[in-house]
View 1 (cartoon, helix red, strand yellow):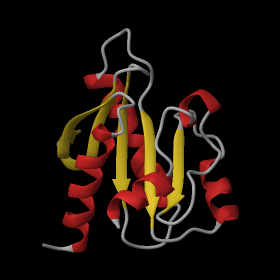
View 2 (cartoon, one colour):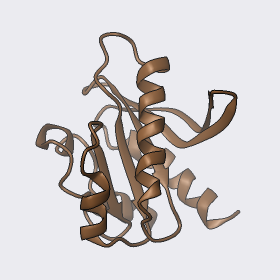
View 3 (cartoon, one colour):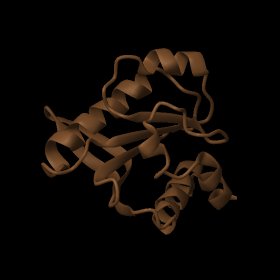
Length: 146
């Protein structure tokens, strides 16, 4: 089993156990967009927040293009999967490392709620407080992986 598969399994099994309303939807969820195939690493639905949570895992340092990819996934989920009463999907990008300044410039102008976190740091304070308080911290996720 690769590190990525191992990490996926731990995140997939851990988030619902938090008792905070996470429901597992799928791993490598297929999206067809304009005839092209894309795959969301992990997709959850948050019952209390009434929205999807799109999680992308990257086994490398942050790259600005990751934000565009995650934003597109959120837009597709919002358009195709969301019920009219659902709130917009939340995006979480977990990376090996990040340059905070590059992340901030990369997130500027995006409307979807997106959090970027290193595996060893807390989720960047780009999500509204009401969303951050309902999501696990990176420390909680990391503790489960140990």
